[in-house]
Image (cartoon, rainbow, N blue to C red; front, side, top):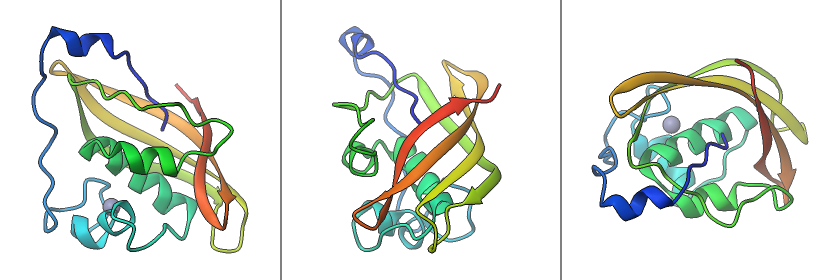
Length: 149
Ligand SMILES: [Zn+2]
């Protein structure tokens, strides 16, 4: 997921706080485990995502909790932006993985297609993207994505 927005809006004043996600909260990525046992263990470095799909889920989740360092370290060096800009008006509302290919423990590339739902200033929307992943130093990283709308 590569959604980036401009920083300029920040000067208009602080937006609402990010969605509160606690260790025992249901994981925002949609899997049944709690956050700490699901994407949280990747965010805090206790584990690395073993598949492209789990990396995708953990990156979506990192947008939800605004974990910029995680997003940057799971971004391929060739396409990594200098910073991630979080739109304070945007609330991620759910992730659905619609298709995966390769991306297992035994692959070095993979693609994951997904729909990420959000509300922006209260208006619902959806981002549909097919993301490409590759491995760097043995760990899955996000390479790029194309919108599939
Ligand atoms: Zn998760």
